[in-house]
Image (cartoon, rainbow, N blue to C red; front, top):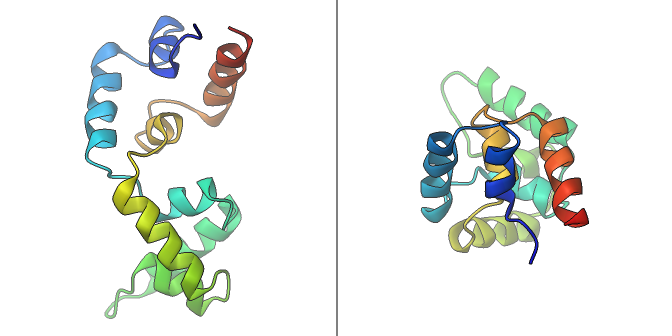
Length: 120
């Protein structure tokens, strides 16, 4: 049986057990960010997510939702936004991405753990 991702990141010393448990609790609540979900669903690349976030941060008064800005910038369609939101509401999130989002793992560390997990 392959080693679980969470077990492996702790075993490798990338995160503490406490950090892992914190992120797992967030994962159970389905608190993935829409930009991360759109990347996971291959709707956007990281550069596009960054562009939307930059645009969103530059808006002072009328702060629009991430998905609406992505549509406005012609990066995705309304249908794609709706798909990502449905996923966000029903998904528990991807643990590796959530650990990166919290600043506990780097992308290289996540990729290293994933490679080791596949080889197990």
